[in-house]
Image (cartoon, rainbow over all chains, first blue to last red):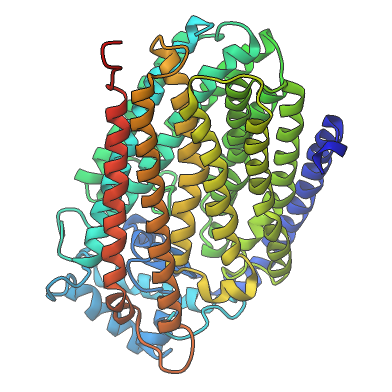
Length: 148
Length: 456
């Protein structure tokens, strides 16, 4: 098969094909960037949601959890924790989160441990707002079930 | 060694191997914490172990690429390296920054580390694989730029070959796409979208160019096949890489908030992604069959063939398992991703590093014909130990992923993540055992450096 392909043909496929793919990729990137605000409900991205994302990063939460399917696989998916633990009710989710964060690490021998992050009540609320916002992102019907 | 400046590769290679030992050790610690949650807690929580594990991999591969480049560029360009001193200085900067960063992870709580390292000025931390503090990220940019400068100058002043052109293209891509590590939008979805520009376009596009160039170099040296012939193969491989890999980024955009059209584009492009790796197998084995010389360093060629095969399995086959959108709906964010990640990084990138080290290190140590037969035999057994270990670990993680999907995502009687993980415990023990085999293999490999021929 490869006998019939010459070096210059292969070279042209590389430059031509590579450029073509890159151009399509760039075009779609512009379109995606244009669509993300609506798909993610950026209008609902309050100061508290942004602060929550910063807390999420500053405490390296993604080092154990996944969020919208990306991260580490040591601890549960958190995109739909609002539905799973808060039954999609903001007030009950927030009070659940206050209790949960304060109780860490759980005193269950050899259960995987979540560290105590010593966040203030206000910070935990921000984290909750961030997770509530995340749960409403249009991720093409992912996750498939409530257990994530 | 044809050019004395090639010697700068040596510290890079040695340091990369030391980091690999650290990486595997931390992997093993994580494997234990997966089963016994109290292990090392609260001394080193899981997220810290993982950060050390993955960051060591990134730093060791960059070290390996730099060592490989500094070794092969003078021979390709047919002149001494433009500035060997700069290469040594950047080695020490990179090593110091790397060690300081790892120590920071281990001894400073992460939230405090973000404050100490000016993360509030320009927040870039706390994202998977890009957890490095700002000064480290800036350090990586400085080191990569000087590496690029050194490589480009050497080639400009010397002979240009297809290998050097491909290598430099890969390096430029590596440098450009790392810049996205500094862009962290407030919108999580936007953040994820551009995060992949660094992560995917490194490992599934630009790094593959670097891999192709190193592989082609070693094959020319160990088989003596005509350069024209090798060049054609290299072009063909990287053409397939670019055509499939760039739009293949789309397979990460299925279920993270990006538009629907990525379901199609990502699925179709990434269905082609195994092809360049399959071509690599044909490449390595055809060149071996058509070889003009019988190089005494047989183990280097073994590593080269192994890279092609394991790269194809890890990146190609294990990637394909979950790359079609309807399948990925169920596999996204499970241990199957981890299985694919482990075997592809091992097969494509860690093994190409072993390939070039296996070829170059004996020459750098004054043994132009490779290590003695006895040492090569020990190295061959380490080759098998590590490969069997990685394959076993991958199969274990794949099984864990499938069970996880059945437990949490298929049918009506679903159980929670934590319950599912408990049910997988036995498999995680198996995984840890394979991890131990890999570490043993690596120590066997280290031992091969010191094996001498009996009364030679």
